[in-house]
Length: 205
Image 1 (cartoon, one colour):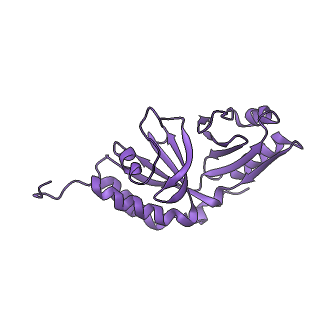
Image 2 (cartoon, rainbow, N blue to C red):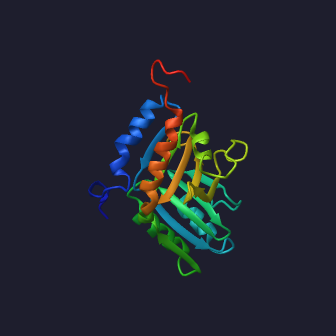
Image 3 (cartoon, rainbow, N blue to C red):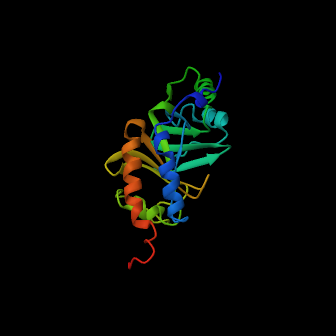
């Protein structure tokens, strides 16, 4: 199947320049960007069922510990529930990923659903990333509690998100948000980020 991402418009295309400008103005303290069109495939199955076949197809195990993730081979498997995972991969690979998973589960009791169009992903990274997210998220984001390999379904600024502590492409966080709420959440992040902009020359802080 041809990759059509070049003709699609991401939910935050209109905000790309403002996100980049905020990143520049924060001088590395914050990195804000959209990671558009990531493949996202939801998998529901009994871990005692076809999990081994799914893991073989993915090349990584499905995490069984609540609110954890496993990454490898360009894919990330996120634990969403006792029998539910979200597999995230590079843009444009959702059809192949879905086909591999469907082949792996075969006729066994399972559900494989491409949900790539439902969400976009925001990258929030930099030294002040945790501080910024803490303004609108009730989770304990200290590295000891929510370091790399952790994920959670939670709210950020009252928007439902999947929050992932990630080390790639930058150490920081992925914020997976419904496309219909992406603009709102980007505006909230940009507004909250003003706290971390340097004071204008001559201004006393």
